[in-house]
Length: 238
Image (cartoon, rainbow, N blue to C red; front, top):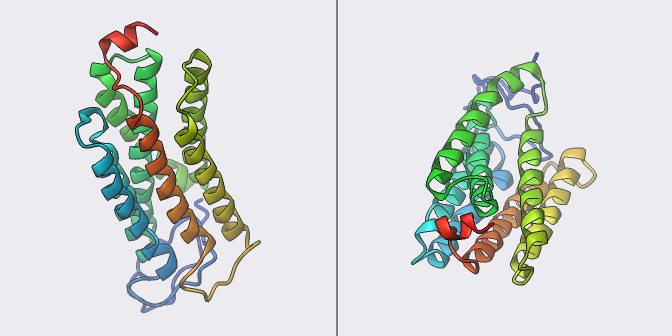
């Protein structure tokens, strides 16, 4: 059986839908935007997408990062707006899109995947992980752990690349990890109620997660933009 968040009151705009598997700190409103702070904070991903678009100009290999960030923001906005499992599913899809974009890029840099197969690995991984979400949800498994595993996997990939060298130019990557760690701390404080004011619809721990993780994605793109595009020669030399 799925572990569900408390349902919305009857008669509310989204009350006829199955609720998500997590109940964040912010109190649900009987409105079209159920959790305002957790919803509007996703604009940070759209702002980040604009910054990424400017950073990636002239780099065809980085062209998908800005749309992926925008997708994370749009799907997360829809999920927190509705407080429904139906749209929470797409929130996971958005996160998988970005995670597998990074995993596929790193696999090419490691020489594990040919450059021409990068897109197939990216989209295939996203599709496979997304297909696992419904059965995990209905079994009551903590689906959020899948995102954590993917993030750890990408960090492990980068650790291998760092050991191979060159080791210069990792300041932006360190900033990305620091921002993500801070974001995770705020989100954990929100979920555990260690820091929680349910009636504050402006600032919430999970809303801060959105803002800081969006900044982390931008820092990650800065890191990639300062490195050469992976190609047959660079891949074969590893």
